[in-house]
Length: 242
Ligand SMILES: Nc1nc2c(ncn2[C@@H]2O[C@H](COP(=O)(O)OP(=O)(O)OP(=O)(O)O)[C@@H](O)[C@H]2O)c(=O)[nH]1
Ligand SMILES: [Mg+2]
Image (cartoon, rainbow, N blue to C red):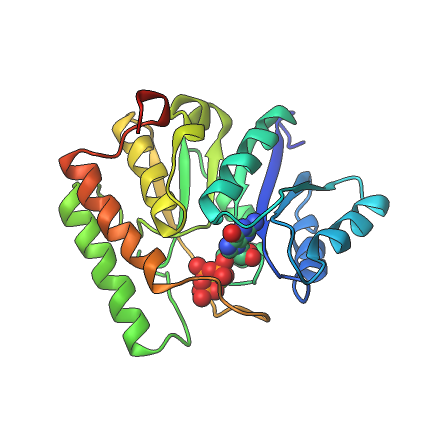
């Protein structure tokens, strides 16, 4: 609970993050008043069991176990639904690999907006250690997405964000079907279209601390396709028959 009596739930999807998960929990829980919900897709390395063990002695930690790996987007949809059912007033999403610095949580939570995005590409934001090629792809991808969708965001695919619970309900997040980076894009697009207030604050996005990346070229390409569909139609909500 924060000073306004509002609960904040930090949602972290995990797949094979055994090397990071304990340190991450400690770092997140250093922020007063937040609860931590992991969403584990039956990680083969035993991440889920490790979280359950932590949860036994730390009531602020819980884990939503899913049967199989279905991509980041599906994990977040399930995690957000669970966070809302826990009574969250604010829901934060972040990675488990320390690319997103848990110390930035305080700044993210201090903003007064329907959606706060930790941005690599506003003044003060950065991606230290990224090779030129990755920097170029990410930057060009962002520019392409902005040009095609018209959405005025510097970092449309970033994954460190804070949602008002009300915003999530308003955009019917459960019908978002994208799996990878495009999940971030589609969620932002819905919030923007719904007229929500969106603020980008600078973050430093570091390389993962340990473990391996689950991002594939296909996931990156998906977001470009989704950008085109968001602009020219075709991304429909599930209940409308997509
Ligand atoms: N539950 C679940 N978590 C996932 C899945 N795919 C990725 N994750 C988690 O989502 C977060 C981001 O995944 P990463 O592999 O770091 O992808 P990325 O940060 O976009 O790419 P890198 O910068 O290369 O690390 C991490 O906490 C992963 O463990 C999935 O299918 N299910
Ligand atoms: Mg990562």
